[in-house]
Length: 203
Ligand code: ZN
Image (cartoon, rainbow, N blue to C red; front, side):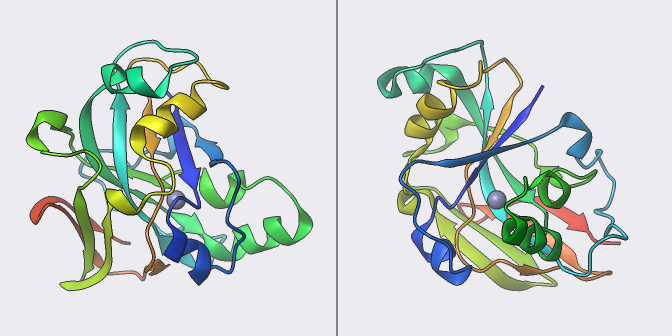
């Protein structure tokens, strides 16, 4: 399986990192080795002093698709989850300055935390899902999928022009504003529509 991530999909997050608003979705990937293994903590890697959390709604692809039209995108996923796109912000800044690819900052071991998935039928409207992240019981990030620049169906259509989607692939749909640093000992708690969907320790 592969993990396809969308960058700069919420206007307020683009502002907080002083990035340019893109004309088309920013896309990057993580390998399957990036996934935090079940019941394991997130371990801060030695090569970064600034690991950021980015809380993102996840979509799990349910069948093979290529060049999917937005009106058919809904047939390609049944499940929604919540994840963290862990980012070595200091490494990413170096990559950006030099115009280099982001993989060392975004695709390292443990950089993709994936929650359990829920059937999409649990949600009245895929384009109006509230989600949030608490760190040590304080809410640090809050988002709603209605604020995406490109919604889930548009993203599936867009990425499928470049990459054949396969069953089990996961799309990270971008983070809202409020990203910040994680520290050893933090306990991260993800919520969708007020329900706790994961808890993750940082070590
Ligand atoms: Zn992200």
